Image 1 (cartoon, helix red, strand yellow):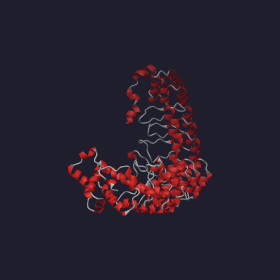
Image 2 (tube, one colour; image 1 turned 30 degrees about the vertical axis):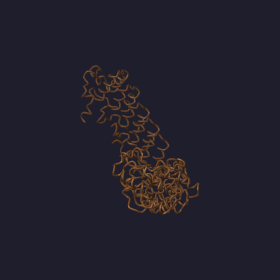
Image 3 (tube, rainbow, N blue to C red; image 1 turned 120 degrees about the vertical axis):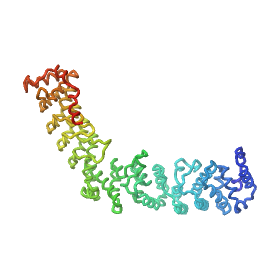
Image 4 (cartoon, rainbow, N blue to C red; image 1 turned 120 degrees about the horizontal axis):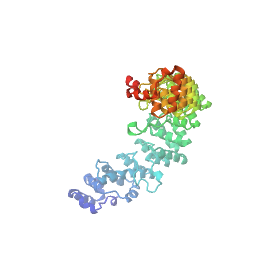
Amino acid sequence: MCAAISVIEDEGFDDVPITERYALRYLNERPVKELLYDGHDEFLQFFVKHNLPQDDLYDILRAFNTADDLALLRRLVFLSKSDGNSFAEVKWRQFCENLLFDAVKDENEALLEMLLDVGVDANARGHSRQFHDSTATFKAFNALQIAILGGNKNVIDILNSCCARIFTGSPVVDSDFLSGAFTRNTIDFAKPQLASEATWHSKPGGKGLDILVHAVEQSYDNIVDILFEAGFNPYSRADRGDFATGWVPRDSAFMVSLRTSKTRYLGKFLTFPYHALDRKRRQERLRQLTAGYVTARCTENVALGKAILDAGWRPDHVKLAMGYDYVQEYLHNALEQAVERGYCEEVRCLLQMGANPNLLSYTYVSGSIIRPLHSAIEEGNVAIVRQLVEARADVNVLSSRSNLTPLQKAVYGSSLEIVSILVEAGANVNSTTRKWSRSAVEIAADKGNLEMVTYLLESGANVQGRHNHNYRRTLYWAQNHGHNSVVDLLQDWKRSRHGEQDCDAIGNIMSSTTEEELDLLSRVYD
């Protein structure tokens, strides 16, 4: 021990203030027993401030267990806990934390108790020299994990008395620890700590929830079982920060199991004793069971659907707990996602379950509402459009994002089949909107779609009257883009239906049409 604290006067010694340099020389000349029991704390403080702990000290100090050895080491450790931030003082604090890991690994209870007694953090993470003779994975474990892997109950009890925690916060490291405990048959030592951790972290955000989710993702059956038995809530989400910091809440273990179709875990999680949960967590469970039931119905998983019903899920229970018809809202949100992904069979199942294609979402994306029918038209999915129309989707409702009717959107997409479905379902072929003054037939003429123009005229597009704005603008857009076939079609249509006097010369229309007339409706409404 005397060699361990000897002052090394290297090149940096000249930079030490004269008063402190004298104290260090004085300290180096004192007998060991005097250093053990006499008041030289000021000199020892200077020693800690200006001398780095050497690597060979670990091997020396790890064997300490006598009263004299620990007495001086206790004073050095205590002084290293000061708020000083010199390079040497920081290294001494790291040295003490690493020494604690060595004491756990060596099962040196006397050294461990001394280090904890003077304030070395039981949950401190080891530094670069934590375990110089161990594998990289072993270096990542914390003190309590190492004690459990070693199976030493006395060391575990000592750490627990100082509030040591069983998890590091890294799901990968903590999963490796639990796997190692199973391999070494020391998992029973971990069970009391796991139960305590489950109670401590019963709210979202617990480290154990991260591990449970990770174990589900990786199909670590033993780890899922032990964490579930310890009481970790499979319906709690492991929050990893907030949106402001760039982190988002992770899915719960139940939702991960549902998404990955791991029915073994779902069946286990459905048995979780939810009666002990508070109101907020019971609501979260009902939300996730709703997702599970909808998924079971959409995938025709009869067994899962029955298991969820047996677990006590009922639509009326959800509505009562949420204060609004959450089931209908969830069905609608699921319908939107199924439409966007083009899952025809899932759309069919959701509509059969009662999803309302006209329900407004409670959540908004960039301040806009994209209705399922509009999404299906954008994707050009004829089958889903037909399903939604048959389910009484509103064929004249505006999209808040584009401010277009479904018919206008379908004409822009040049889908005559979708246009015919909408018209047959009662879509207004003459509808215009605030932002876009063009009717469906104007859009078709502007695109030069002769077949579409013909269909819309036959379906009731209003072009009657020499000064009809719809007629004039339709001709203007067609002529302006060189769609002569559309111009001829419209003029012939007018003559055959309403007579020559109802038509105007194309030259007159092109010369007399003003920008104000082209944008008449938007100007009037805006």
